Image 1 (tube, rainbow, N blue to C red):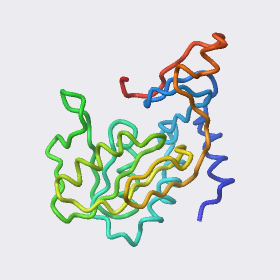
Image 2: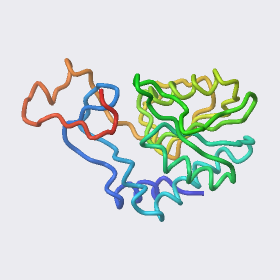
Image 3: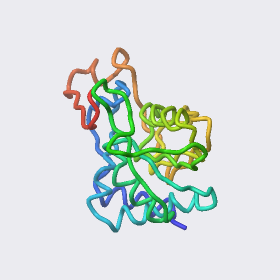
Image 4: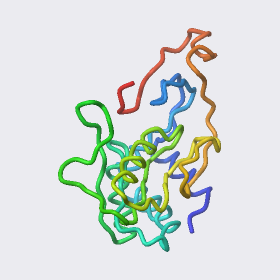
Length: 193
């Protein structure tokens, strides 16, 4: 079993934790950003973290792992490799809504694990969760490498992470960094807001 100390070492070694003034996918602002995509630059990190997550769902009977694009494409593959099942991803359609494309489908009763690299508000995961449930599949849980929700997310299914990281964030109107005006706000994520 991976220790919290080892997880923090990986996040530091991989250059995941950034400091500055960031606009999150949720629209909120923060002085820290977790660029988990950097975990997947090096398989020694992704293998270790994704196997730790997969271990938490090994008895759930998962037949497919699905992650929202872009952040969880590689992650869904790596977690599914550990669970020895299929994987694919959901992506935004022409209207900006999460959809199963490229011939990916889920079947009624199929046991699905949803994964995301970082969960803050859980918005993308909730969209995929609704999509999968509407197809009649059984979502057995949601897994993330980093849970930075501060306990504020409820998916209605078990939610497990490799590590919980509390990072403060603010609505733009209440952002102390904006009020100081010293740091330009940066949007490092992939999703357009």
